[in-house]
Length: 129
Image (cartoon, rainbow, N blue to C red; front, side):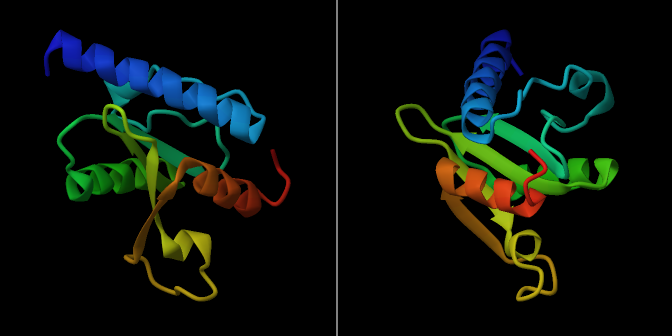
């Protein structure tokens, strides 16, 4: 990965974490250990392992696999946030983590807008934020 790609990714993380801080009311920062330990991009949101991608070429399946691996390591629920240039942030989550009483097994993915994902996260925490 080139230096410009790393820089773009870091800018994307900072941009998203600023938005999440505003939407969720909790300070969200970069997980600086991710580089060394291969962890989630942030662990500031209880119960959620956040993976961030700021790329033009979409690779949802491989990104989701990465998000799942990181979530398993931290015993959290995966959430993939991604954005292409001049487009809004999109979020991929597993319906099992959103409505486990309806979707009893993992593997049914849904894609949503950032504001909807923030609603899901807030509701899943039951006022813990």
